[in-house]
Image (tube, rainbow, N blue to C red):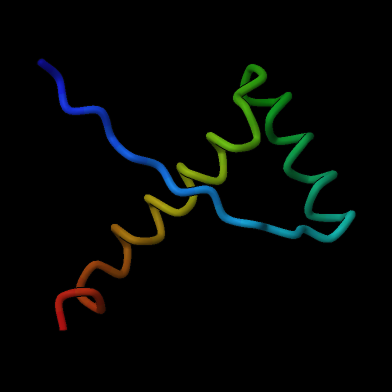
Length: 55
């Protein structure tokens, strides 16, 4: 039996400019969903600053 990851929904507000840029990025990357783009960005940021999380 596989362990399914539990997800928690958060309320995230973007400015109109951020939303527009996210939409353009989504389209440019082959219609990757905006939520997946946000998840990817968070993962990359956490990996970049992993040393800060170890404390």
